[in-house]
Length: 85
Image (tube, rainbow, N blue to C red; front, side, top):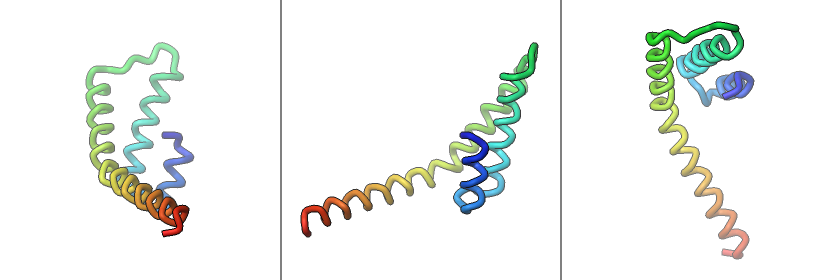
């Protein structure tokens, strides 16, 4: 997730502060691994990255499901309105 999007979601209270911080932490490690010549991810750092990413996904999953439900309701409403119901 681009950091700009994370900032926007945090400012709109979609992301909590811990979720936002997890995204920032993951992005920092990713940027170091991608942009620093000769940078190697240690096994411990790799484990931490996976653990943080898993916690973040667990935290965001209920929000994603809620978002899917809202989108489905919106589609149904639009379909009903289009059918003149």
